[in-house]
Image (cartoon, rainbow over all chains, first blue to last red; front, side, top):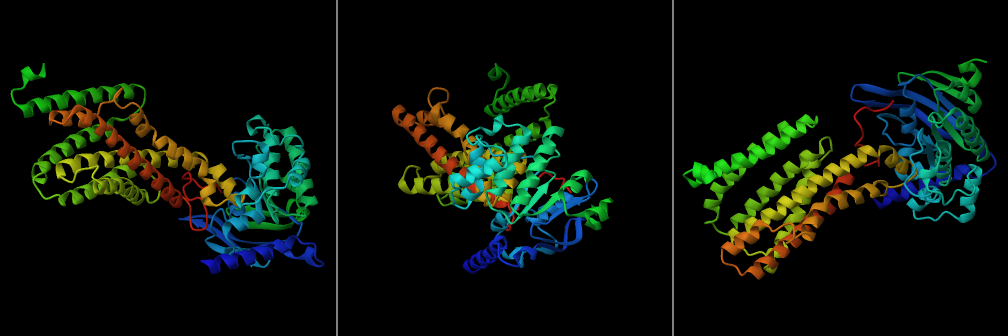
Length: 250
Length: 265
């Protein structure tokens, strides 16, 4: 058990190294899915999905409802267990890392914010606090400024709009200093005005932090605005993948 | 009124049981008119309850004459039966029966053992079985409430729990809020019973003690003793139950396995 924990910790430190600005590191593969699949009984949710992403690259996963987009995303941070294949974060097979360590490094923002009862600051501090660390005040202020919520720290989450809640959700994920960010239709539950604001904000945070990012969206226009590459799914299988123009047309 | 209709004590008892069951069925009928369907469960519970208590009545005639150690087997049987009944309150929850038997066994069993060893519960079977069964029955109710509440809380907060997991929280932290509310709500009946002792509720055991010649003050104090033991047994059961249930709803890879039936693609 102790050996497993030490191995997990060592693997985790190797992943931390992915964010260090070392010469040559910018071109390294940060996330690699290898023949990833998940079946539940007779139902195939995801089948034989492979791709790799380099640092600061953004992949949009598109496809019709029920095509396996969200299922694929849940496999990438191991909220669900793959029945086939695996995922590498850097050169580390994610099964070598404690799931909680993995999820800290592969952050996620979901369609609904699912904030915890309490204040904005309590939500943003949740991730670091979960591993016994305190989020420095300066870092907290930076995060809130980045998501456009300066002065919101003490506000109760019940007084936030949908767009504000989604920004808190982004700040909360960023507080863990992730290497990869997974976005599951992060603006689909918002009204049209908030949608573009939040989308542009997420985009700027992702670009500024040089995060590797996978965004699930059913909105091809959003995929064009957001992504470098597109992966199209249907019935859990990859039907097309490549640069945005190649897959979605010019 | 019933006394005039029935000549024998057994006949009177059956008549009284019939009238009491009728009152329960009236409630079931009223609930049905409000689209709340309890018919099947209530009728089965009434028939089963009557059959069981009559069978136990016959059994006690023999057991009460037996050596004290036979009470161990009887209490163990009660714990397993309580676990079975309790587990039905958590349909779809993996390992509910095992969790229930262990929780009730450790919760009520340890209180019964320690209190008997200290002399708070007398060892004769006539004392140990009635008091022990009260502790087990209350632990069963608490466990049933805890299972039911925890299952509902988890199913109602899948998004929040998985958000916590996605932020790197361990399973215990991700359901801490729901474990706490489960524990608190499952103990409401035990706390209310203790709080209302003597004002709203005078337990039957006290009447029995008075009828058998105990001094009224001692009989009264012993009710407090019994209710305190019930609280201890129920509290311990709920504590163990919430910890064990938590382990059941997550996989070894810290994934939430208790989720609504349809998996989103």
